[in-house]
Amino acid sequence: MNMQKDCKQVWEKCLEFIRDNISDKKLFDTWFKPLEPLKLENDALTLRVPSMFFYEFIEANYIDILSAAIRKELGHNAQLLYSIAVDKGANSPAGNSVLPSNNITATQNFAQNIPVNLDAQAKDLPNPFVIPGIRKVQVSSQLNENYSFDNFVEGKCNQLARSAGYAVAQNPGKTSFNPLFIHGSVGLGKTHLLHAIGLETKKRFPEKTVLYVSAEQFFQQFVDSTKNNTRNDFLRFYQMMIDVLIIDDIQFFANKTGTQEVFFQIFNSLHAANKQLIITSDKSPADLSGLEQRVISRLKWGLSADLQMPDAQTRIQIIERKLFKDGITMPKDVIEYLAYNINSSVRELEGALISLIARSSIAKQEITLDLAKDMIDKFVKSNTKEISIEYIQKVVCDYFKIPVETMLSKTRKGEIVAARHISMFLSRKHTQSSLATIGNKCGNKDHATVLHACRSVQNSCETDKEFRMNLEAIEKRITE
Ligand code: ADP
Ligand code: MG
Image (cartoon, rainbow, N blue to C red; front, side, top):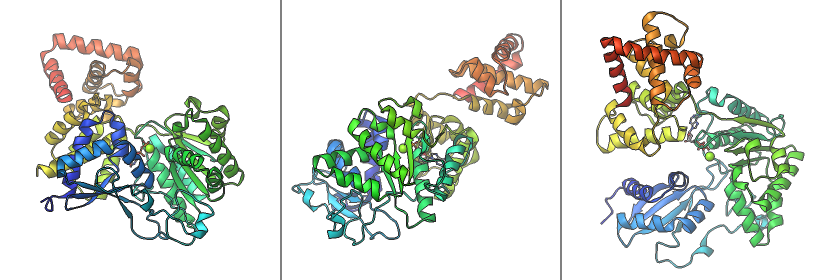
């Protein structure tokens, strides 16, 4: 009866349900967003999961909510199958392994069926990433082709990290950027950049073994190796087989002393052998807590580069690049509206963009500024939308039909000064920013200038009716 149902739509509904029932949005983004609906046949939904580890984690932690969502959509005969993505690299065997959910279907324990039996040769060196069923031991790089340098927009916010990453890919292990340590808060492109570096390295040096692993996966493998008495294999795998080791989100090692110990050993032997290490974290080495001093000192050996939130112009480029890639067009004012209003992270920005596209296609409505505004109100509500100084400046300048750069310049022309004062006044009223920050972003003025501007606007409001009407009109545009 569900044959006609579209698996993407069903999955969207499931996601909605899950999103509503999961308290931590970050967890939702981490564990559910990467799942991809592949097919729906006779009430059996197949989801693609990025890795074996992912599959195990979901089954262990989120199966209740997942099965509730699927049953809600497909009824009580619903089944869930997982398709585990394998490396799409040229040398790997095609296809995925499909596994039934352990918990939602009536199938018995199928753990033994998981096709990870290695052949005789591979058995000497068991490792969690070997692609099953092939003779030569090959390590699946775990890289995502979508996260390439081509798709990574360069800006002031990421210049150092990006160029160092690119240099490392041209010359792994041979630059002074070893390790390359990239830090920045969530959703700013760390993982994307890591994959880009890995992919570029593979392109330049197909014979090198590159491995991307999240700190969480690494930890899990270490725990398993201890449990299974294969710790030496684990160590040997990392110490001997890898040319470029990429570890994502190393803050996860905090307070895990055993994991830090093996990481330390692996780091030392790879580094001594001129193998490249690339590591990310949500904090700078100095701010990483829960990590041993000797580990932190290793992280500081090479280059540490941070990622910042892109400025509005870069955000516009990121949106445009993404739209271009997906073959979608969108009015410029909508793109600007999104870019100016979403300044928490690139991930949020992409999320908003995807929601907007989804809404317009579901409602068969064109993408307009009104639709965008309506969506953003709903989308950003939960993330405490804050109007940015940049957005205020943009609205003010649009209103007076002057370029933002002119307003930020040193010009003393009357109407430009008025626009500048109004921008400062509204920034003070509608953002949490300090006077110093407002001045800084408004043409490098000091806090006294901002204070003076605010007083002057206040004065004009009381004495000049036309001025007041203009101000109210602008304020309405900003807050509506
Ligand atoms: P992090 O690992 O820092 O939490 P991600 O690498 O997962 O962040 O990035 C979140 C999303 O934002 C990804 O979809 C990524 O492709 C996108 N993104 C981040 N920075 C850029 C950029 N400079 N250009 C294009 N896309 C970006
Ligand atoms: Mg990440």
